[in-house]
Length: 169
Image (tube, rainbow, N blue to C red; front, side, top):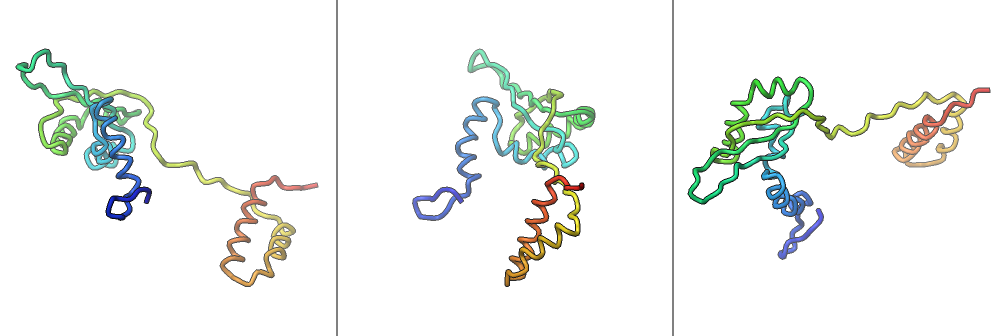
């Protein structure tokens, strides 16, 4: 929780970020955070992991009297996801229009480029401790009375020692 309302209730950081970012995204890319956040529901989990909506390109209107024309949704995707996305274009257009509440999108343009996903770094693997290292670690933490704290410190010590290279003569 980051902010507070005038009534003293905490406000989630995501709500504050949405209030700041939504106008910027609408102006720059013609797209709302809601569409980006709901992309997995719109495109499905298989396509959402390998694609993302980039922007909505609205056609220019020279006069106020010009007829309304639907926009083009630009979607970035990688690899074979482009082929799957192209195959499901009609369905995705219908889902985006249903999400937006009116016929906003008429076409989809696919741009192939890497799509970063937030999977984080892979967990590092550590070497197993030698018997001497394990005994030294156990003797270091043996006088700690709290079992949970002792186990946590032993795991921490094993991680630190496991990161180091083995000292073999």
